[in-house]
Image (cartoon, rainbow, N blue to C red; front, top):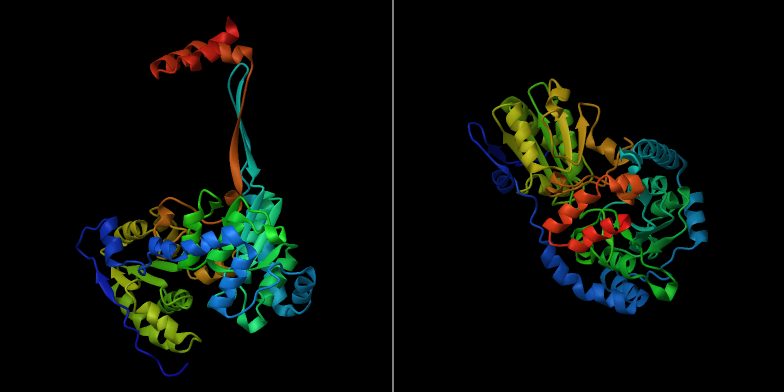
Length: 441
């Protein structure tokens, strides 16, 4: 931290131009990340964990992190000690975050439905939790007790019977997961916590570690680096996954009424995560754009991770984008499909009505993205890399499955028996129709 630094945040001028999704994501590309290449790099490790189990996890941790993670399972004494030593003020913050996420998750529980289609013809839909889930909590450039909360709480509200948390071994803590992560798990009553990280942890979730009586899980959730995302993609099918949540990204949509200093702080806050983080401002105001750029240097220079922030803001993935009007700005945002979208316009509700693609949307001066990271009650595990076009953030629904229950009696089936037979005949599957008509012979 020192004198103000010059941030060369590039400008992309789209005024007077038409653009589509391909153009937007070519002009403002996410940092170059090749998941398929990462899969090739980790494929041997995934197979090694499948074959050798816990010894493979130990060996790769020693090799890559320089620590011994044994015992892989964190003891109850270790969890209790971490909770007892947790800073009281931090504990208050964690407990408030837990309560807020619990409240939102409870209200968002999917509701069962029942539809009567005729006399004796009923189709019900019921929601069932998955039976087991592996919750991944990263531990690279930051400490993430918040990720424990965002993963565990909605799973508990959904009613998942078996929860297992994995977090990487930390050199600074004698090869154990960060004590704040352990304390948060203990606060939530999670007893199955494991000292393992990266793709090896995802493989352990998928294949189990029979040597320590750790059975495979049905679903894996949680953010991580490119190799964690690669492992989730490679093992999808063996396990269910929430998403390939990658490097963080923020897009701020603003007009001339916005507060430039607030916007600059929010761009910096996300750039703080990673050198590959994307911080994008889209506006129809040149004056606002210039004011934000002028604020960035001072704010970035005073933050702890100034070098990281500067690298992220000056990367190809970050930019100020100038457009003709707010409709064009909303169109750009929908094509970009960001993880975090902030709205700073004269009428945010009107602007919101034009938005279709975003992981989470933050409204106005007093709803910054960093609020969502910790205390808003919403989830911070969100789709990145345009995945918001087809998927949603982690929530209670992520841990549940919809099951349809078909309940027809004789009268209900008789009413449509001939219609079913017509379908079956048209599709060249007569036995389907015969299975219906046989009940009335």
